[in-house]
Length: 425
Figure 1 (spheres, one colour):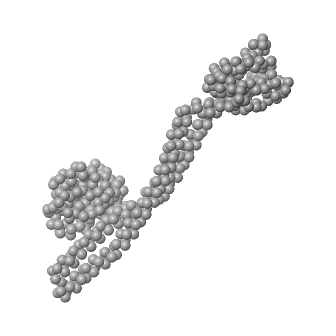
Figure 2 (cartoon, one colour):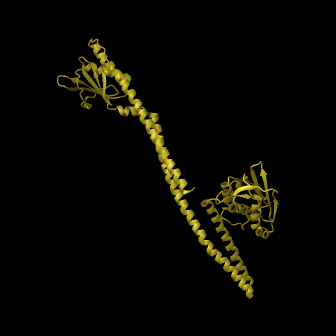
Figure 3 (spheres, helix red, strand yellow):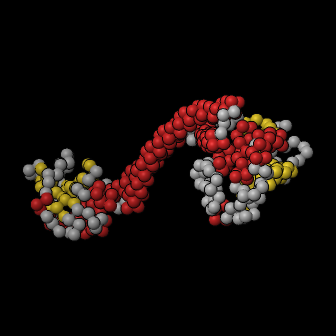
């Protein structure tokens, strides 16, 4: 994936995580506010009932209208308009608040008009017990004489404890966000290491090409000169052949790595091409290798052109790689068949078959994996990095095609490529 694509994915992922976090925070805050509104309503009902019962106890037939005023999130004052009995108030508060919120602590105080200050009552725990040592100063409510105040110091923690599912979902979201951040950091790190590795391989292979070409040219010059001077002995000729063969093999491996690197780093140059013509040219390029192996190639190509939209260079390499594999994995005289036909009306099917050593079923599904090489038993002359078929599959996939393989041990192998036919001729 290109650096700009990685950057775009990370930016979108970051925006997405921030957006999801903001939405979760919004709903969490909204849920808390709803809980707070419900809490305030139930508390006001409980305190209104308490005040009305105080009046009823005093045989005051006044009906209180909206006697409760909320001065703070956790502090309520209640107008009674009559004398307040402290002991009775505590009993009534315990009864009414126990009905509304049985699991909350609260403290209450009564306004003393003689001293013009709040005279503290008690601190009531959720178990209904009074604890005078937790008293605090409660603020006054101006312009009223007969009233009492109630504070709920544990209001926020109580509301939060009632939001179990919201807290759980928030915890899961935080975990996911942390996981995604770690994943993005690892992706960036792996991407950087991959680029370093790719640059190293590219530089290394390019540095290898020049000395290898010089070695091969020097070997040919030495052989030609010695043959002209008639000083080339059998032993020297054999050593020169070994140097040339191994140098050529190493050069081919370097070219394979370069082709793979170029496919991953450069954009394909696709053009409308007759696939039959491309096949013929690719086969012509490897004809010398086929003759050297005492092999034959049989063609089954349609008479009319089959146009496909491909990169001619990379797709020629695909055909050459498949034929080269058919030559290498063969203990006798290679017999290769190249066939091309139209499937339905919009697909072209290219098949390359051979009579080689074949591949077992357990190995067949792995042959397109990067760096994977099928064990060849006693056939030790097959060398490579395991990049050939991975390269082939990568090229086919880049052209919106599909490649499959069928084989049986000692019965040859057939590789089939399906490509979309171009609509432009």
